[in-house]
Image (cartoon, rainbow, N blue to C red; front, side):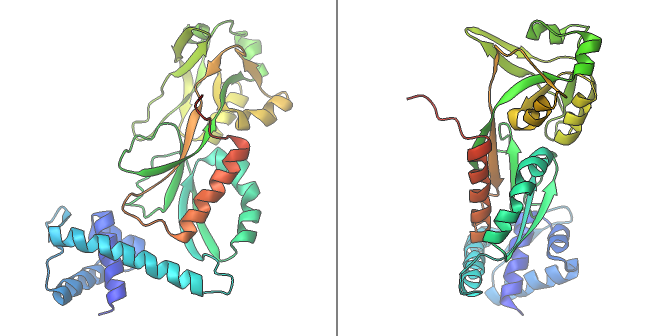
Length: 307
């Protein structure tokens, strides 16, 4: 038995909650994963997992062993990375998932600099706005805007996206310019809907002008779950958009969007890098999170509370 391989297989089964899903993320057969875990239990003379036809549960001994295993695997990973070159650069593969507009407009343009700093890192970047099962899909981290609904995740607050309301000139020529945010909830105007998270629902946006506070929804013709498609629908004149400033700025300059309700303030959208709580933050994950934080300090810095 290769103990290192067996520990990797065991840790992945615990994280995925399934032998089949663990095998898929490891790139080996389910039979091989099962055999490795059985061999590990035989070597330790301890039952690590309770297995049924529907689920896999960790025993008390298995939970203690898992915590030690993930620390050991992470230490080995970092040790290998530190000895792999004279410069002690992090190396290996990092699997992340990021929102599509953030990837297109901020991360990808800056990626050559990241690669120059860390040439031995390989990034598998999922580009989507869908809800990700970090453990089940074996993702190291996700970058997400909005309030984190999964309280089991660890997260670092890396930025605050400043928002505004915008519309294409073609939409305003057809529907007229709304004079007040409440106009967007009437029968005459339309918004572009954004479908959030696993629930796939649209949510109202909080707006304030002095002591006046509103939660504005609106009717839509089209709703999407991808940021690039959301922006494209707005540019096509399908309705009013709520956009982070970094997404709107180039289209304002080009006359493709018009800002609305300039005297109203929208609550900023927090941006987080989230990862599984039971995963050791490896050197390669740490440098990626730090890099994202550096970029957002320029494009959407964290708003400090007033003293």
